[in-house]
Image (cartoon, rainbow, N blue to C red; front, top):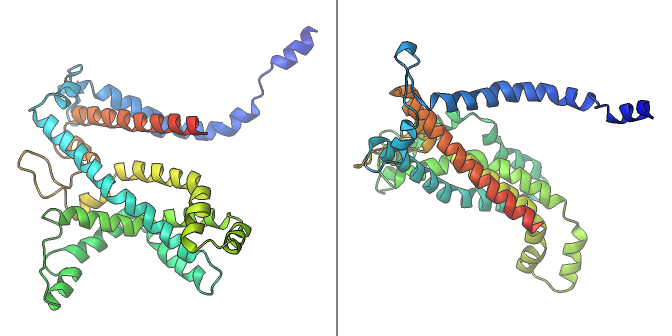
Length: 304
């Protein structure tokens, strides 16, 4: 009896061996940086002069929540800019890919070519995309202003005035990333049985009724997934404003009109540099994103 109980209580090692490589990478590249950043956030940290590092406790966090301080103004301005970008970009990053997926969800000749064309910007790096659109939108010698001037239209300073600077970043981001969402929508559309559309058409349903009564309800899980992942990805905006506008134009109260929170953390930690303050900003942003994810998981679990 004791031998049988010992065999039952024996923990199999094989599943843990399979997850061990990922666990090691997660611990080294996610776990260690997180706890290291949390540790640094309690110091006035100087990586160039470690001997000058001073323990300040919660002061870096208090500065972020102290109205009137420079840290408060710059950090929360960058958070506001980030939310503005999310509000501007996410609807386009959902609706345009959905429309393209519906148009390309057919068996006509050439559809594979157009799918590849719309998806191709996704394989390019952020630096390449940013440089391309910086050249298109720049005021002097830019491609867009060249043709606007040629046709007699006004030529705004796209990258240095508002709201044109934010529009430029949104356009570049949508053009770059919409192909990824399009492919996901396209795969979901192809999983919908064609019999449902044929039956609805026999019953007299028009195209709009078939879309609202069949397509949208069956796409709801994928639609929710794309909205959540797109919001999270947009909240991590960094490369486009860094290379296209450098956060400009400057705000009278402090910070930049196109400076997202990730760019503010980068500037705080590597340009000034104030690693302790930047680490505190990172922790606050991480808490925001974890709260957002937790709320979404709770809502979807209740819905399921």
